[in-house]
Length: 323
Image (cartoon, rainbow, N blue to C red; front, side):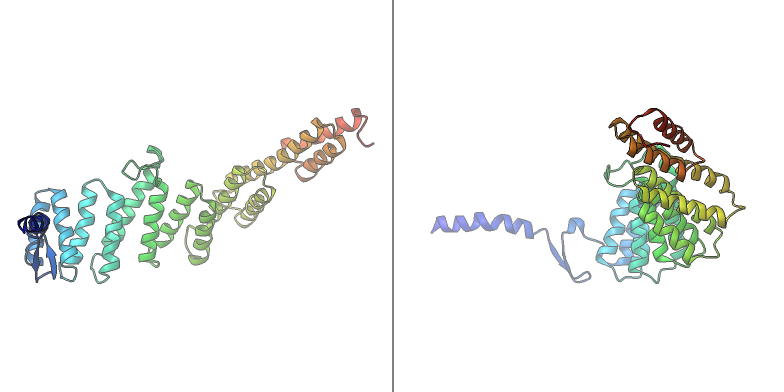
């Protein structure tokens, strides 16, 4: 019998120790460990958190503001406490996390009076990521190797646009989203964003620039996949349309230069195919591709070179067809 009692004691004693640290609090309707408990009222918890904030003890202030949001989510202090969570994170050098916490204010407490301020803070954070791209591709935090500066900027810009699609800066935000995707190499998403800007904000001063950047998407994608003739044709077509529609654009000279480069790349692709057949001894096929390169791109370096090569093969290769 003594052994049974001892066994029960050994089993129950650790549990008693554990539960002795927890108390039921009617104010919050929760079991709380006093060590991590909030103050008895949201007013006291706010005052306690602000004490740390005013002393610039950001970590402690952050912890206490989070307690207020967690245990008193319906209190009048909760929206401000959620805002202060973002503010503390900014002061702790965690802007990406701060932007997401600011977003929670707008989603959980849409009645907040801080809408404009939150939008501007999120934009400032996104702009910082956007402008810091030259310091390194990856943001040096615990999320190392997960999201680039471009992706973080784009994600925050999208938050802003969801929050306020008709904000006076909405077209600028939309353009930045497209630019982030373009620079991150996500050309499909970039095309989508620039096309939506042109469609949804037709009176924006950024429409012309968005039209040109739409061309850049196809140009960069065609350069990434140089053997894809369809992509090159899309790039060429988009540039031609831009030049025709915007004859006085400040991007005109650059667009014409890129068009020449795209066409030259197209000629080189055909030239390389012809060269392959030439090395295989299939001179008839080589001549056909040299002819096509010159026919489609007569004004390019590789088109001219293809024409000279075609003539040489016809004149000096016995197996070639007669002129």
